Image 1 (cartoon, rainbow, N blue to C red):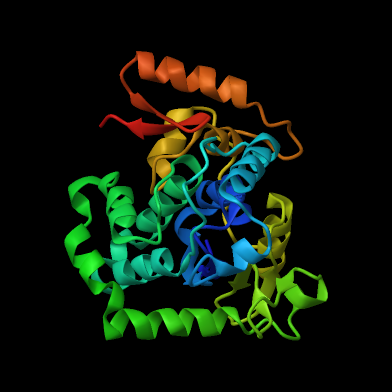
Image 2 (cartoon, helix red, strand yellow; image 1 turned 135 degrees about the vertical axis):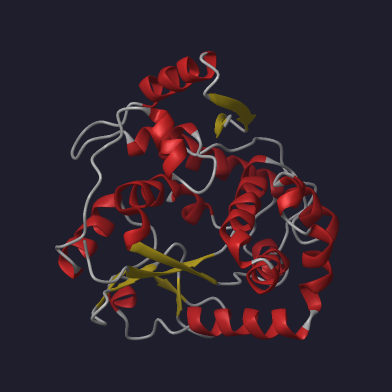
Length: 296
C-alpha cells in the first residue's frame, strides 16, 4: 500500500462529450485503485454562452447526431431529441463550483448529474430551471435552493475563475506536446478530460485529453509501483458497491474486463438483470442504456 494517495487533477466540463465518453475508463480507475487515488476536479468553462458553437455551425440537431456517434463508439448512454437551442457551459460549471463551496461531498455527484442531463435529456443547463431539474435527480441530499442561489456569489465566481485559469496553463506541457491542448479563447488550455497524476513524492505525469484506459494505467505504474490493484470484478453488484455513484451498463462492463480482454457489455447487462431479479439492484432507464442502483 502506498504511503500516500496519488493525486489526480482532472480537467473537465459537464458539456464535453469526450469527457463523458471517458467515464468507463475513469470507473475502472476507481474500481481498481479505490482510495489510493485522490481526485480533484477542475472546471474548464468551455464557453460562457452558445455563441462559439453557433458560429462553428453546431445546431441542436447536429449536436444530437454527433452525440449518438459518441454513444455507438464508446458505449455511454445518449439521447436523440435535439434541444430547442444551443447552450453554453459556464452556468453548469458554476453549479459544480457552488457545490464544492457549500456541499463538497456532493461535488462529483452534481458534476455527473449534469453530464447525464446534458447527454440524455433536453434540459437547458444554462438556465436555473434546467439546473434545478438536473439536481432533482439526486434527491434530498443536495440543497438545490442553496446551490442555485449561490451561482452568482463572490465565493463561487472567484473559485470558478481560479479553475478556468488553472485549466489554461497547458502551454509547454506534455499535453501540448501531444497536440491534445486547445486554444479557444486566447490561452492554451487543457482539454477535457485531461488528468495530471502526482505521486506522494511530488512527481507528475500527464495524460492529456481523451485517452484509453491503458494510458492512465501506464502513468500510474510509472509513478508508484506499490499501488495495490483490484482484479476485474466477477460480480457486477461489487462494482456498484465500490463506485461512489450509480454506474451505467458500460461502466460496469469495463470494470469486469480483464487486461487485453474484450469488453462484453451484453454479459454485464445479463448479470445485472439477474441481480435485479434477486432484488439486489434496481435498473433506471436513461438514454440508450441504464443506470444501476443498489437497493440496500
